[in-house]
Length: 382
Ligand SMILES: NC(=O)c1ccc[n+]([C@@H]2O[C@H](COP(=O)([O-])OP(=O)(O)OC[C@H]3O[C@@H](n4cnc5c(N)ncnc54)[C@H](O)[C@@H]3O)[C@@H](O)[C@H]2O)c1
Image 1 (cartoon, rainbow, N blue to C red):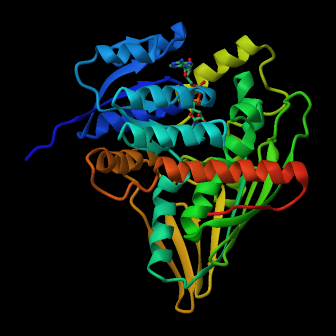
Image 2: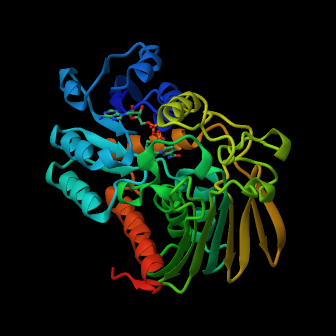
């Protein structure tokens, strides 16, 4: 029997949302029903899709059938919009970080349960094929028990064009919330356990871009594993230097061809910066790539072997030697989000990236912030 298409609307048509369009169009299980976008310039891009474009979420009630929404709006809007959508009877896929703080995230999870609609958090980098494949290798016991997972990611995040609230940690801004959310998601996916303690330091080193632009986070897991998330967004050395020049989205970018924002190139006024951000959104995240996505370098050490990424897949090293595993590259990270989303919305599958999973990522981000402020380890009870 052919199952009915799932009607999805996009709310907020920026960089994250525009990256999802090819995946929605390529997946016959989904039908793009509408876009909600209030900014007149951005609306022009959305109108090219040939679907209704509304200015506010409430207008989605005009649609005769809608299964769910993808919220790709600025983080401070997530909680209020997600709760309104869940109350309207729509499932919600919300971008990471799911909210500005744990209180908001908890209210979203409670609304999902109250209105009996699914809440999914993504895209986050544990959806990526290499991270999913690493997790399966670990779950099969092929490298024994995991002792350490370390992720190093060095980018130009601080100097890319931004809206002012993207720098404010109270509004879900700064690299700890925006990028640490990806790292913590990946480390939890690979350590296969709950985090019991968090210790962190954050760095705010450029007064002209007042934000947490770098961090070192140490996670202690209940099963004995340890993990670190190291991030530097101050546009120095790139972690592509450690990933054979392969970028976050799976493109080969040798040092001399990288689009790399620096302190000197940042637009001056807020309007200039917003215009530059809107322009960048049209091509920031490609839909298909020749190599696997790399969120920096992730290395797993286990009692019987180690794993790291390669441009085309994974390298597994154990007593039998080193084996390179090639992974399929025909599905982008967003394609893989839709695979899980279809299963979830149809009531099948495990719903790994649930609201509760995203909420735990946020709780760990908040604990890292608290640890950085107090200089102490923060214990988490589960
Ligand atoms: N998963 C990823 O790899 C990834 C990448 C980029 C951003 N993100 C996340 O996606 C979210 C959006 O970030 P972005 O960089 O795309 O931002 P953005 O500013 O590029 O896009 C947000 C869009 O929402 C619109 N908007 C503002 N108010 C709105 C409202 N009330 N209703 C509907 N639309 C509204 C804005 O006009 C803008 O076009 C953030 O939570 C961010 O962390 C995730």
